Image (cartoon, rainbow over all chains, first blue to last red; front, side, top):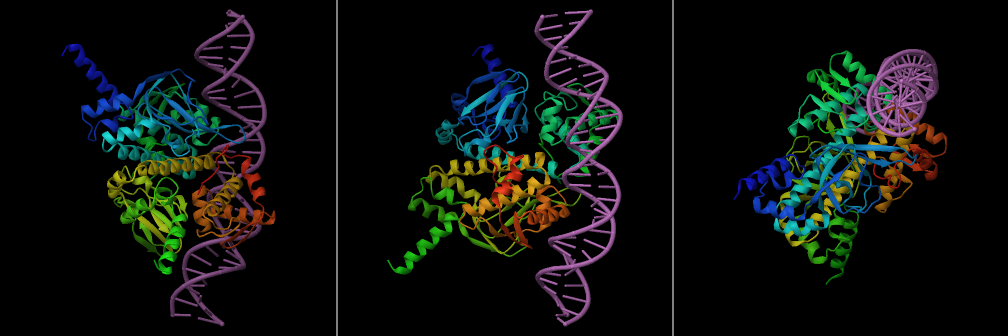
Length: 252
Length: 252
DNA sequence: ATACTGGCTTGATCCAGATCAATTCTCTAT
DNA sequence: ATAGAGAATTGATCTGGATCAAGCCAGTAT
């Protein structure tokens, strides 16, 4: 076995650790052989540029995707012709889980910056599951997570003030980046203020005013897309007036 | 085979048709043998009185439930001590899907009236799935539906006016009752105005005013909990100014 | 350099719906 | 029957955040 080979394995392992499908092959019971099997159905990584569609509204559902790098927005089209953003997906998040039953995508997913995804063809999951026990269970766990996250978003929209919504959103981005090994306090918001406003159910102007207000209060620095969170506890105080007991994660 | 036996089978079939787990055993590939197998893991129907908990926040997750009769509300507790209702479950709906990954219930479910459920112990699903191909797929479909429904609720809360929210809510209840063979236009709202307001993210007073307003416009009759929808198209017109293209179902 | 374009910020005004307050209706318990 | 408690309705007022409007900034094309 050459040194080169060893380096490759390490690299794969690193990449996998930040992958949303890692939970399928990593911590729970999958050995190297299983990972090799999984690798046979994972299509080659798929790269996208800013603005590219991963899938469009109404397209047939064929696969689920895990974001390896970059970020996405998913959104549906409303009767009045406007969009409604249903979530942002960062490295490690999954896309497409809502389309399993309808077999058609009920929303669109679009890259917010240069991005790459792993694609796992859904029709091969059944055969693969025969070989990898627990695969189905992991998939259901991931879907269960998605259900919970959506319910956090419901609380956010139903109960929280504009201030609390934005603070929650920023803390959530921070947490998700942290759990993937990125910096908790300095990051780039790949989405526009417009997109944030849309997700949080408010007007762009309000988002803009809140960023200014948070900056004046010394909670953060916002230079265009570059955000530096200065006072995590201060932000938490704003959200905690009205957040979910215990689990207030994943609202974006 | 006695007449009595025939009647029993017919009754079971009728009951199953309105059951949320029917989709697991009915239309897609399950024959009588499979149904018998499924029956062995379905615990005896569980009956509840108004106000009884099906499960509480934080309890260990052991099973998913299908509502056979009656209705439930599920809700989480917020930091400030108030509840946030995340949904109402009518006959045929499933409960508990959001707790698979955490293994603890992240919300509570409580009967709104006398109700009964089927309980399917989750730890037996794996073994059962070995015998019934497609069971996993059906479960994932049901979870996928749940994800979609939650996203409809997001749109409702993020984009729609108070008027449109209530109209959407009422039409949704109506549709769900219709699909289970109940009347589309006359029904009993088992939940209080307070609960409706909570789900829709608004104040009780607003709900009350809207019921009065809808009644004056001839859209419906509201006598306490008894609701008669008089003008479905009129209600649709109110929602359609701002609803999801195509699929505007399940917002409660 | 200059102009253009789209995203962002800031100010001024307005309104849908929250909040506060008082009354009425229903149901339950005595 | 009567009292008491919670749910629902209705009215009066207030306000958070939307909307309208105008300027600003950064990146791209000419």
